[in-house]
Amino acid sequence: MNANDTTEVRFTLDGKGNVIEELPFVKKKNGEKIFYYYDDKSRLTDIVRFNTKARRLLPDYMFEYSANNQVVQKITTLSTIGIGYLIWRYAFDDKGLKTKEATFNRDKVMTGKIEYSYRFGQ
Image (cartoon, rainbow, N blue to C red; front, side):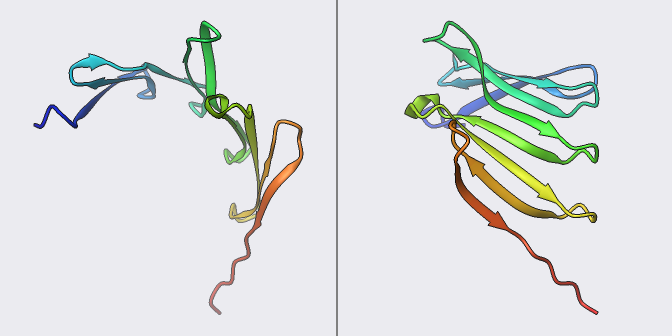
């Protein structure tokens, strides 16, 4: 193994087999620990890390789900580039296929949108 450009990542699992911690090692030194949180259905809800400026754990990602277990909203923090966060919203059809995807900034202004359509063979 080449120790100059290798990162080892160690994962800790909970009793249900979900990853709850991620710890990278670069050149045998601890990296920044990442924590994963789940709801009672074992769906990933938050990915967080310690923010040294805020001196507390803050989320990088937050997920919300539909009754059909589809991700309907994802919030991505962008604190490293100073614009706060982006909100991604998703819509699905009755077959469970994604039909819309839209991005909103922290002021709730839409900044992008994708619409999907599907055609199936006869």
